[in-house]
Every structure is written in structure tokens, then in C-alpha cells.
Length: 412
Image (cartoon, rainbow, N blue to C red):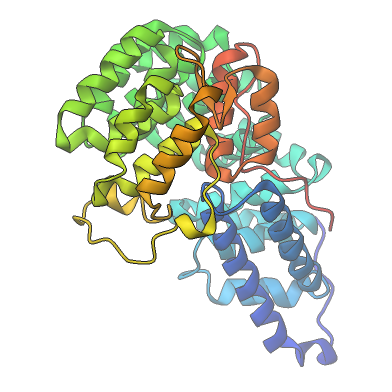
């Protein structure tokens, strides 16, 4: 075990500065987490955020003993951002005592485990791979969850360890661990685990059922369709992911029929708009432009048109007047999207309509082909990068689902 050296009196005088640095790292990590799916951010924005976080971490590592003591003082009320900073300190310094303390605290506050998993995903493999293996071999389910969380972000396959965890009855009873294992099996497209994913779709726990069906869909297994549709038609917190997975699994005919069904009801019209955007069906553009004229649907419908056509809104297309919308969960999801002048958007579509062939499917104005999607995955905003990753997963059955939120390993 490597212990931190004693703190000199001179360094103790800088304690308020290190306290501010710790606060800043926690805040910046939370800010980055919120940017991962935000349409105003791009890959290079995340890279800039990562570099800024690393600069603050380098400063904290000048006095790791002070930085750690500051975390310990507020550990009872610390959020995931503080756990992220503390985990970077512990793993980078190879401090076994502090790593153990972190895992104890995370077991008491599972919401903060995401910070530890993210830290393990950011660091180079030589620092965290021994710990991932150690956690996987542990009998403690919280340790195993941390290991799988890191593997999920890193897109690394623990192979036999993952198989053993999914098959283990005790692991199945630990909902958080089992869901993470099922998600990792789907993301990595572990076809050998398909029977276990199918079996898990019969689980009574809704999150387990959804994540199992989601994994089956990534493996192009049609048995997931009914489960996904059942979840997509409810107000479940996973309904949006379920709908996206279902539409990419279905053939274009049944997928269009499902979107038409959703469009008939005002309660599910936003979901129909999302479905049109994901399918990239140019035949839906006239209806989407009509929906964009309705104030409460403008943001989402305009975003769908842009997602299909690749039309770039000009500055004078943005509406300066706020639109009063019915307050509900679906409307809240639109707040990140700009209000677009529907007349100008319609005019741009009419002017360029010859660019989009009927019957062809498009994403950001490009046909849904691997080469185009790979380019757009690297060049479009974070929300579109997430969609591009889903399309690539459907077109490349042997490739893992790309992580649109992952950055380069930290260089500390």
C-alpha cells in the first residue's frame, strides 16, 4: 500500500485553495455529465472540458493528502462529482486505504458510485485494470457493480466474469448489479449471453425487463419487440429508449405503422415525432412541418426536421418570444432545443426538397450508410452523436455500441 507523505506546514497554508479546487472539479464533472447528451455541445467541447478538469486535478495532486482530507470532511454530503475527484486521487496515487474507504462510502450511497465508475473509466488501464479484476473477483456486489460500471464506459469486455455474474442467482437478486450486467452484455453485443437476456425479459422488475429487451434489440433479436413496445407505450422512465430500440429493430413497414399509431393521440404525439426523426423517413417531413407550427410541439418537431434533412437554422430563424407550454415531463425534455420559425423552416425544405429522394432514409441530410454515420458521429452535436451511434449499432451487428460520451484517457 502506498501512503501519502506527511503534510508540510507550508502546504497546510494553501488548504483553502485546495478546497476551492476540489469544489471546482466536482462542479466541472457534473457540468460535463449534463453536456454529454446536450444538443449545444460537440465532441471537441467535451475534450475541452476534460482538459480543464485535468488541469484542476493536476493541481489537487500537488497535495493529495490535503485534497483527500477535504473530501473526507464532506463525504457524508458529497455528490457524485466529489466522489469522482476523490477516486481520481485514490487510484492515481495507488492508495489502497483510500480506495477501500471510497468503496465503503459508495456502498452506503449508491448514487455516488457513478462518480467512482467514471473516474475508473478516465484513468489509464495500468492504474485501474488490476482493481477492476479485483472488484470482479470480490464477493461484495457493490465492488462488482463498480467494476462493471467502469467496463461499461470503457467498452471493455470482462468475458467470463460477465458471464458468471449474469448467471449467478445472487447477482440477479441485486437489481443495480444485474441491470448493469445486462446493459454491458447488450452494449458489447455478447451473442453468447442472448439466452440469459431473453430469460431476463420475463423478470418482474421493470428496469431488468427493459434492459434485457434493450440488449436483445442490439443483438437484432426480434423476440424483444413485444416487451419494448409494451414499455414504449407507457409513461415509464425508459419509454424513450424503448421506442428508439424498437424502431431500429423493426422493418421499415411495421416501424412506420407504429409511428402512425403514436401520432393519432395527442398524448403520444411527441413520441411519434421522435420516431420520425429516428427513422429518417422523408415522407414524414410534411407532417413534421405541420407539427412545428404548433407552439407546444415546435421545438421537437423542428429538431426532427433538422435531424432528417440536415438543414442548418440561421440566426434569424430563432424565435425570441417564449412559448407557453403545458408543463409535463415530455415538454421538459424539449427545453434544451431552440424555438424555430416554422415558416422559414418550411421555406428551406421546399427550396431543397429535391435533395431528398422519396423512400430513402436520411440522417442529417445523408443517406443512412456506415461511412456517412461514422463521419457524423465525430462531427455532429452530442444528441445527434448518440443517434448516430444507435444507427451504427444497427448496421454493424458485430461492433459494440459506440460511446458518444467517452473521452480520451486522462494524462495526469
